Image (tube, rainbow, N blue to C red):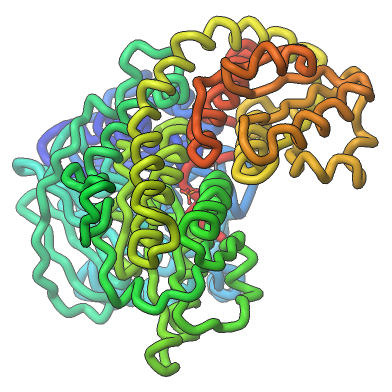
Length: 627
Ligand code: AGP
């Protein structure tokens, strides 16, 4: 959480910093600030609330400085007030720091600094950093050296950027367990929490690694390790298209991203399905090209998946597929729980981290702890780590043996949509690959599933074409007085009920819960009356009749019933449901990628009609880089 950006070059820094922060605002938007160096002084401007407040303040001043740092905040230590906004300054206001992360030992450092007579202006953990650097500067030969010494005092996960009025031609940055990239332009250099901030200016990028510190000057970039030794690193050129990060005429990013889903699935299919594989030819190679090496798959007896939020829901669909298609016992845990209560060690286990951002602190820590606790054991117990991520350049990609790149393109809306569908696609590919290797289902069944997957893009298009108006109309019924929603589903569609509820909570602030449909009668049914709508994911297949019965039980308690079902089933289902969101006919095994679409649209329209900030809902951040 929090986004940091820095610039040194030939252009006006403030404009670049603000444009960069706009692209990082998804990481946090409680307050924002920039600090530039002008006439040997730090000029620091901050504002509470969204970035436009800061932009308004900056419009009143002219600032031609060519070096500066900026920050958009998701509050951890200290309320979202202007005095807690970054940058934070040292006592004589000559040095400014922005930070993404948490300084865990800040209380100890703060009391040490207070005992030296330093007065603090904020409640943040970050403010200790400029004060410590400032103290070390007095006895150091350079700003770089002072920063190195200061970092040695810090504990926690952080990415920082520093400017100093007494060293006006350098920008120092450092990374320890929080993302930080460098951008290389013509006579100008950038740093940011995410490449999106620098894409309009350069596609030449270098990912700073943990334990590295960089000195950016108008002449170039020098990289050192925390011990002060110079390191040689080479940037790479990305083939990202900056247009991907524009709204392209849609009212919100979330809506644009919902509509991008057919294209995302097409890209996934083109990337991973082997076009030469034909079930009837009995091929001896896998139907999918996900590049799993034998050391990850041979003798595989158990899979454990670790994830948070929406990625956890994708993991639950994955569990169903890996067990039912590949026949491999699979567990799914919240990464935040697993890291403190790890499961007993099972040999021949593949551990999968699912994270669209690749930067979720809990997921990364859970995978790292898994690697560490198995490190000294015999080979069959060693950690085998696979990431399912949308960011091939992210931290998770660095720590895993292999990644499945979900190819969804950047997702800006805080509520995940297209990345969820792409993660689920990743699990289809993985389960088919393992099923083929372990011969758990026939080639003809594999062929059938692949055929079904090939229809998904056009089927999602059908849902978007035929349901959009109806769902928008329906959404009006739930914007004024509805305070609670219940979602139910079973089997492979239970995770879709969970995802529908999470989407609604996140962006419309309506309380929503999801249950396996059969569980309602064990307690939650007590919540139902005519004020609590129930959404039932009732896709034809093994549990269809059961879900319909459970929905009837809700109807008998006066709940308004909204069904997600297939068009062919609509006539029959009309007897049960008050409202129906229909999707094309589909194999139950593939149905989650279709049944989730109307739920995304319903939550989107409810939030949009309520006039809420769909793309940046309150209290949330896209990338949760703190514990
Ligand atoms: C999704 O809509 C949420 N914003 C959130 O639950 C998210 O899925 C979670 O924070 C995990 O993020 P990750 O996929 O980047 O790890």
